[in-house]
Length: 505
Image (cartoon, rainbow, N blue to C red; front, side):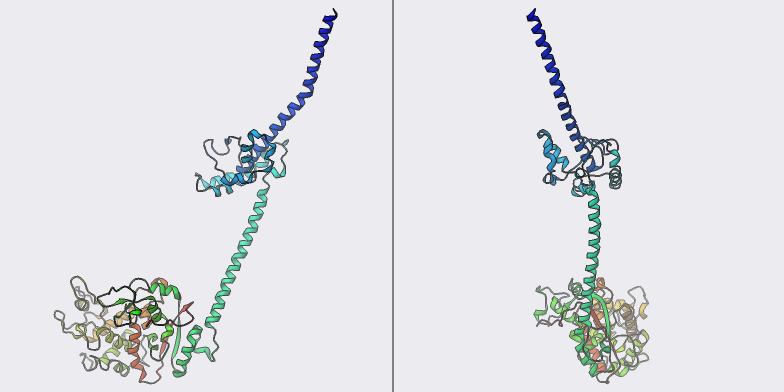
């Protein structure tokens, strides 16, 4: 009986002991589970905060977010920014959890910008709108009982917005500073280039300072001469690059070899390609601001005060036109050329010099009127005269003078008299060059007054020295007649070299 009682007593004691153990251990066990669940909630919320959508650890989104089969690409560098608080999570899940925790506070737009080369998005605008909506509704998705520390939440978005505004302000200030610096630099350049320290600067106003000593000397010798700056609106290097491309500028084989390109190739069986330094010399106006070469810039419109039969006679003296009678109502080529120039609006002195340059001092088959098959036809300016498969340059020039085989009558054609040929050529020249901002020998060769894109095109000649040579011819019309009131239109470029470009020797 005593044995049974002891056995029962031990059993009750054991039951009591187990019960007490359970009472003690149960709260501890349930507390750990709660902490684990709370930790998982914190990670889930953080993951939700990254993309603005609810997601579990496997990355599946609810029906308001991305579709289940869409992938999310994360920054490969995110592992370098793992949150230090990830140590609180169990070792078994620490790698996975810390990767998600490292994305805390990062906008989806930032993720997209890091991975835009890998990720395909069907509608960029709609995704951005969804992200903005999800960020705005984030607080509503959180349970009231859930406690999230500030460092776990994405308040850093506000800081980023503030930083972005600061950056924008800085950028605007930087832009303004850069613009101010550029304007100051341009002002300093203009002050340096255009400022003058010579008395009576009126006659060279608008010219760079490097032009002024040359102009002062010319003005002192010829007070009635007028110098007009022609602003090209083009940077010097840009203009030179344009002219130094293709085969726009050729040089005579009689010129020193130092003025040619290294290639021995000939163009039209005679000319060589001029090198850059040679082109720069002939393009630099300062090289021609002297008594000998200033007529390179002579305005070529008609002016009865400085253009007459006497001035033209000075030019054609010694040429085939001096003794020859042009026929018709004219007893001399001088009077014929003056009338043609007056009617066309072109300086007749310029026309006389052009004819000599085109036909030579002794004339050619194009100006004789005696070419077999084209007798009685003339082309003093070589208009339309180039070689084809079926015609020589002379034949084609006279074919043009005759009406191009179709009876064309533009520019006074057919050119069956010297006067009609000269008048028609003058009209052609006026319409295609003088009225097209190519009003000097210089601009006839270097087409710099019609914008950078026009340079190297629509040039009257390819001979890089041709314009300067024609200027020397027309000079004869003026030098023996005192100080005639003539106008010189001189091109100006921006950012020119400090000194005039020398001709290679």
